[in-house]
Each structure stands twice: as C-alpha cells, then as structure tokens.
Length: 119
Image 1 (cartoon, rainbow, N blue to C red):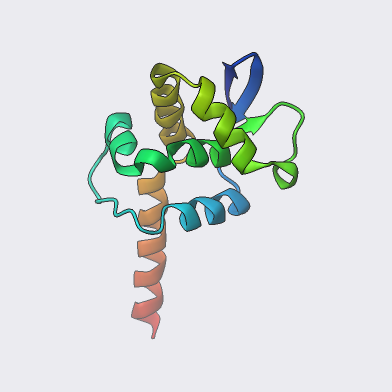
Image 2 (image 1 turned 60 degrees about the vertical axis):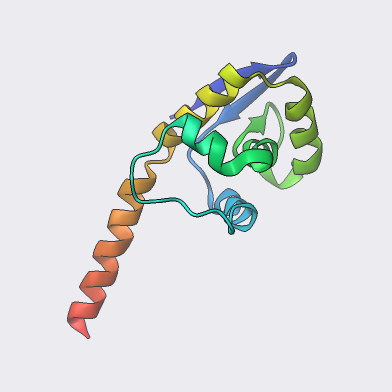
C-alpha cells in the first residue's frame, strides 16, 4: 500500500514503515504517551505538537530519494513552511492505514504470552 502527496511542487510517498523509520520515530516520540484506545488524526496532531514536521519528514519519502539519503531536518523545515493542515491530517490518517499499529501490538503480545507459557 502506497500513498502519494504533492507538497510545494514536490512528490512525496508514504509506504508501510521500515525498521529504520520505526527507530527514528521511536526516538523522536519517546516522551509521548499513546493510550491503547483508537485515536484520530486530530488526537495525533495534539499529542505530537511541535514534533509533527519532523515526524512527517520521517514517514514521508520524497520522489527519487533513498531513506538513507534523507535529510530529515531539511524536509521537516520544508514541511513546516508549506504543508497545510488538511494534507497533514490526510497523511496521518493514511499512516494508520499503512501501519496497522494495533494489529502489530496484538501480535507482539500474543508472541510474548506464547513464550511465557512455554517457560
């Protein structure tokens, strides 16, 4: 599943996260507490606050750029100057379509429970 956006004349894509992006997001959002409840794009905007441009820079991939070549600070600055709220909300909604986080956590919990039963 891939989503495409045009922001300030540049094309950006969003795919399911890879481990490098997950690591970057975890580092950026380590002080933010998410509940297990369903949250909306508006909730994410409120929780992340001023970290939003950098979080979106981690999630989005610009056309023709490899993840290892991304300058997250530079992309975050560009997004901060040109990304409208409607598109930001769409990117967040699409993030949860690309990355079914609750399903991932359930799998991890089941694996842990399975391991503890075997011990």
